[in-house]
Length: 98
Image (cartoon, rainbow, N blue to C red; front, side):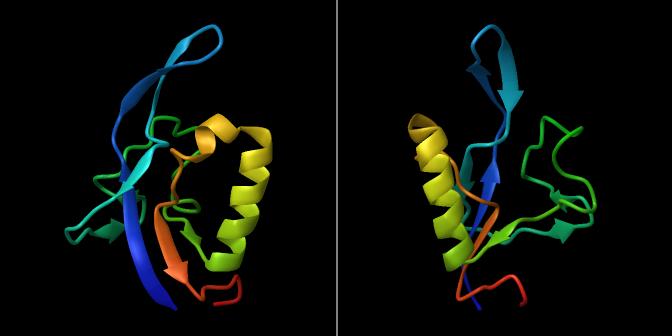
């Protein structure tokens, strides 16, 4: 497996249909080292801690095949949002069993 990028989200406000929310979903690559802890990367913002983050969801690693599936499903459901989404870690040749 080859690490391609580590991506973190900063807190942003976005308008939903009938309310405004804070989110950290828009991930961008970082060029400096990061420390991965039991609850994730310190610099990566998680606003919805009820549904995201925690010790069982601290870091997502998407490999090429999984990323393609996620990308295709997300594109079909929300094409305007897909270009802004990135996982926390992207890796080449990563599979679910590695």
